[in-house]
Length: 183
Length: 321
Image (cartoon, rainbow over all chains, first blue to last red):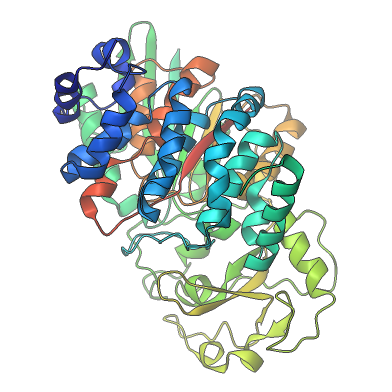
């Protein structure tokens, strides 16, 4: 069944819906329907700001089989776009156990691997927010950590995040060599 | 039987808008008016919700049988949750704050941690005890172990090929080392640093030193709570290993919700989401409900798009049994 665009926009506009997963219309008529991911990605790209944010939020509640289509869009935009998609992927992946994540390495890695060569720094929040600055990631580092999260059940990001760039580059090369990724 | 929900707000976070948002929500839900305590009945369950602002309050929460405990505050680079019983500025005046809340820690970390001299020690007017490099600490994170190992081969020079190298701050960065902080102290004068990272806000270098922390407060805890959600920056890499060690020691069943990386701004609403969903019936110790909680808390905050200046935030919450 192809998703009904008007229905999607109605739900996005309804700010009383705080958790899309609790909404029966979302669960039965939007999540996982044909065309839903690309519709939401389109709204994220060109919709009004608030609606774009709600579209990104809605995608976080999509089922696992939507992941490859979301990941495929990684190479279709700016660094900010890529980072937002990575956040969506993380949200869907975070609750999974190690076995479930490992099963997703193969379908997702072809879309993540091209980012392993991108050394663009991740922009930091520019506000006076009470954030403790602790790491300076590049896009390749973000992709590496997500790939490891899928691939290695016991991967601990703690050491990687403390390394200087040249050492992280070495870790990334290591992963590519071990897993035959095409970076 | 009442289910205690105890939210401990740390220094600075206690005065952010999301706390008063939660209080408003609780007032509407319970018909109460707080402050700091509400009772909510839902079916056969009754929740006893309270807010605390002190180290003692947090310690007591952890020892409350069956409690759902949330810490909403700074991790202080692994030095531990820090508390203030009133609104405190970034660098508190010593007259108004004889005990600096920014170093009023619930100790629950590794033996030593790395922290930046300028962004932390100078900015907050603290004076943590420096690791003296004479005795290798027993319990450290992988990153600190790496620092110690690599620095052992370092030359001690300010500029050199070695990324990790133990040097006196005054010898390599005289200006920041000589500064007097808001509490009238020069706490960087005699300090050493081990590596340099640029502050991504300012672009300026910051000098990471190693300070003694330990887990003296955690090791006195029985962890009788059933859930501990540490909603602070990078609570997973900083506190999970010490928590797991204590959990095993006291045979606790407490489950831990912990964060990767930065907790603010996109996780600012995580505490409120968590409390709201628990009061709506989610059981945070059950796998299916835990998955829903994680998704709801991690979902991209549309407010990030709204502000335009905030482009990306990387906080993600995970669950550790």
